[in-house]
Image (cartoon, rainbow, N blue to C red):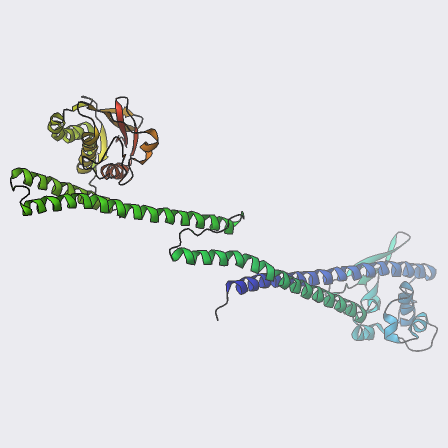
Length: 481
């Protein structure tokens, strides 16, 4: 049977409350009975004191206990005088008081018979002992816990009163009173359980209302409605869940926009070289352009541009699924930089650009890295400078040691990048439309690959404005001890 969360919450609240109320009922019942027994015991102790005073008065008048031996009537009379309202008269009948006082010739109940037929009475649990502890009158059950009160006359102990305290409520009157209290406790417990059930309904509805709202919003989100938002004003866990849901929906909405922009940009980047290739080939087919080495060089350049674009996309896709392979080893960074820079010197010279490389000669800049990926990193940065630096400009590369890391800086001359555009330079397909145009054929993926490689080496890469007037790329890599 599938129950909705509303009824599950209701049953959970009700079960918890009923369990608590049941435990409270049992504890209160136990506490009441124990307290009631203590109260009865206190009353009987007071009566025992009064009985002792009466016995001492009778003893001092007679000088011994002979008047009580085999004289049940005198013993019962003293018991009655100790508490005229004692429930013993219910045992003897309507004229019980007269019988206890000895005003009737009727036979009184012996102590043993009284203890057998009415063990709950005070009279059936009290006994008088002489100074040596021998039983004079009453009934005494050996082996049971009892209260012993000495009877002192003229500084001398002449006897003892013993009383066995009640172990449970056995008096009919007391039992009826205790039963009424139990019924009252049970009624209170039922009322509390009913009140809990009534309160659990709106509480469960309130909680479920918020949960069902989140569930409905989740269904819309899974259907592609990323603009959905839920109210998140509460400060509890459900409020935090609502805020997390809104953050997730916003992230999905942004990712959807980025995905659409990504597809549009990739389509544009692929369409451009393909359109050029198609135009060149159709021109050759129609005889507009002659088939010579120059036209073949143009076709080859477009094919290479398309190949670089596809390769960059492939590398980024591998990075997205953490499949971009790295073979880490101990490297000397200065040596890696010299080997990576050397192939670019000819291209810099052809474009009338100056390349300065300030590398320390003696210091050992050891890092843990992948030689091939670091070559790719330096190559992408140099290609970026070649693509965008104005003719006659320069590029400077410097390396410095810092606390626990190595700082690599690449500076180029104009044009520069506006400050508000610098944080986005490493985003995929990001372009600066004004100074750094698309005329040289870049796809905006090289710097994004650079960031992926640096982060794989546990480093950081940032873009800043260069003192030379162009762009500074600063890379920080952890130094190997």
